[in-house]
Image 1 (cartoon, one colour):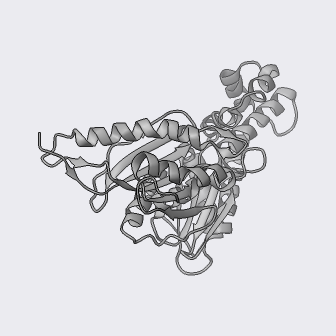
Image 2 (cartoon, rainbow, N blue to C red; image 1 turned 135 degrees about the horizontal axis):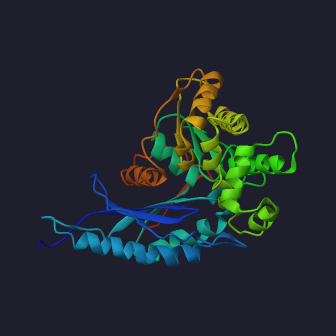
Image 3 (cartoon, rainbow, N blue to C red; image 1 turned 60 degrees about the horizontal axis):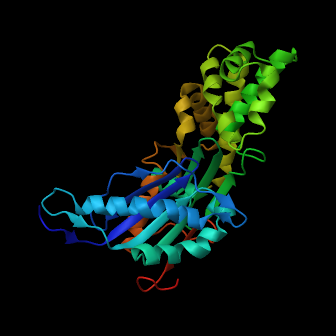
Length: 342
């Protein structure tokens, strides 16, 4: 096997509700490792996202990725032990990121010799993955929902306030609305859906026990969002289910309007697992966007939030990052070398 060639490397991380996804890659080339996933969400505590728990998961994953790169069977395997740049995209960074911002850069310097760190809200990495560095807006929808837009001067965000206060049109919102319609049918109240009642009983059992299966759960948003596909399943034949998805589409379009640049020819992209619901959601959403944002162009998302973290890492390492900085949404800090304080 050929000896490894030391090349500058980068680390890119997507931290979300399903855990960490991590890749390492070479600066100045298109080569990246395959992603590793932890499957365990990073804990939150009194200081927000737990930086210690983040590093407990990250360190062995990065060691495994750099080791596999060194052991590659290609003619000139890359030694990616010099991870000078790191980009961390994290859900909740804007509102729960104080601990990460204070502790993570120094921890990455100690463990991996990282000299430049970008801490980004997951909405920013979703934007970079979907649109790169073009002005426009991105609606990111999964269990929750957030819209983010930029004119490349500053960022604007809308919603993303969680399932109790917002995330209007997201998976938990759709699932909750579907279950409400099921309970209305169960009670005999107006606005109910017999089709959704049948689906809810299949998924959760007797309706009398539904509150006990939802309210105590720490993963309540995910439990609610798990019912969203049943709403989409019923929508072609059930006007109540179809109405829920039309309302979700209106909420999404309202958030997109709130963040999309008002001038020029901005692009709008949709990203996130919720759009796998397909036509029952996408058809009314496309109609709403065309009506409310006639000056914008709807385009397919080029990649996901991990792709966005990689894109930011490459630009940052090359000194070519043009996405605007923001105290809460995207910050870059640098040190002089391994172990230096940031």
